[in-house]
Figure 1 (tube, rainbow, N blue to C red):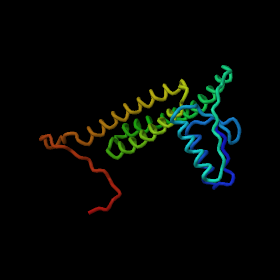
Figure 2: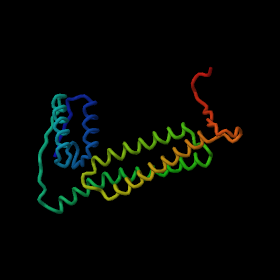
Figure 3: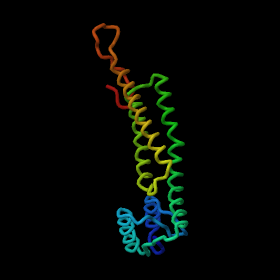
Figure 4: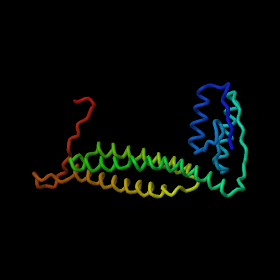
Length: 193
């Protein structure tokens, strides 16, 4: 259990504490009091956070609890899972737009390096987002497997889109009959000679 008060500290400290605890997947039981699993990386981060709070003029208490009631333990695990399930659900809501974008650009013949880079950046954001959720999925929420499968499908779609762009931009030019590589001009925003 972590109890934190940043009264007397800077507003930025309060925001930092909130972000750090939420980033760890804390389940709040009341204002300024939350629970986290007692795992070495989590405990280390919480100790460092408590030190920062104290140095910033606030108070922090870190207490180790043992839940002996199986019902209470199950409810708490359910609360942790519900939190990450909501986050995973948001990923599942947004991934279809990624697939639709690739399908639309492919259908329009916009299989270009620029489009690949844009989609690659979108995929990287999804991967980073899911990695953060995975890190706080302490009790293996069932939806996590579905999200990871969809993310894998997104990686495969990205590889296929990249291959299509490469093929489109390096296809042999049919006019010369010599197998010359055809490069398609991509309009840029930079200065022109």
